[in-house]
Image (cartoon, rainbow, N blue to C red):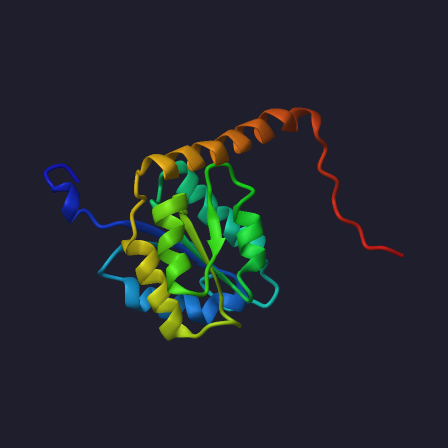
Length: 174
C-alpha cells in the first residue's frame, strides 16, 4: 500500500463465527464489505458440528499477529468465543451487547476483538455495535495507558509462570 495516505487505508478486520453465529456473521459481512478490508475466516458453510474455539483461535491469532487490526467473533451467546479468544496473548476480547461498551472498550481498554451473541441480538443492533467498535480509537490518555500496561504486565507474568503450570483437560463427572 505504498503511496496511500494512512487515513485512506482501510482497517483490516478479521471476521468469524461458528454455526451459532453463522447467519449473523454473513449479514455483517455484507454490510462491512467495501467499508473495511474484511478477512472472512469462516465458517464458510453452516455446520452444527463446528466448534467456536476453532474460529476464536483463528480470529485471535490474526489480530495478535497483526494480520488484522481488529477482530469480530460471533457465536450463540458470544461468551464461549470471548473466553477462547482471550487465551491468545495480545488479544483483548470483550462481549458487548450495547454501543457504549463497544466503543468505550476500545477507547479506554484497547479492546481489539468484539464478541457478539447471535442468539442474543439481531442484525441491526449487531451492525451498530460493530460500527461503534470499528470507529473507536484508543485514547492514549495517561490513565488508560497506565491501566493497559498493568493488564499487559498481568499477561506477561501469567505467560512466564505457565512453564510450571499444567492445564488439565476437563473430564465429565461420573
